[in-house]
Image 1 (cartoon, helix red, strand yellow):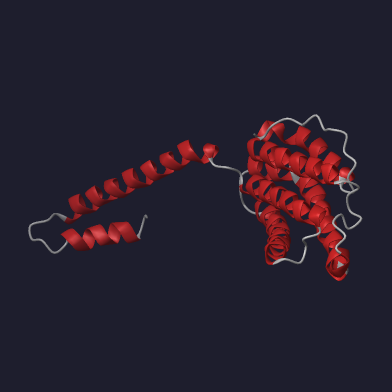
Image 2: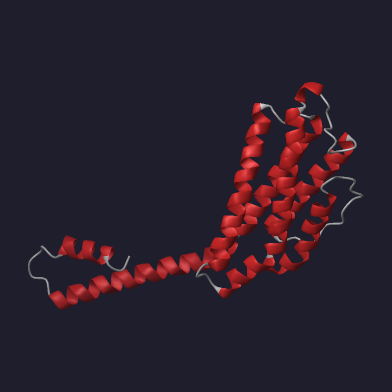
Length: 208
């Protein structure tokens, strides 16, 4: 912005005769400064409204876990759709950790570093939750010929639906900085991770 734009403007006007060099340089400098200030002001006005990248990645990972749990409860862990979900979940967990390392260890503002730090417990809980659900898919894939719909992961389909619903609410809460939920009576093999995710919401409300 400071160099390339100014050079382009000079090249566009410098070939005309009768131009005073000092006045031209001053005019081009003013144009560049005004343009930079407008760009910085626009960013300052819109940046607070943008979704925090870590929150976005966190909500996306939690949502994907819920979608995969839906497949896990029915035993459909080897279909093309389920395999895509398993791949997407693993990639989202890696991206979530990478996003945290970038923001927390980068050269951003102290407030962004502090925000990333407060989200760390939620990131840990999401990592444990995601890999726990991914691991639960392996027995189902190995024993898919037995057509066992629950795979030992959920006692009933109702438990799976409740876990899925809770994850959807948690994803929305993390995306928008909502307070902790009032959790239902969870009887799920991922209950510990869901409780940890909900508890971690308390320290992130101030960032919403």
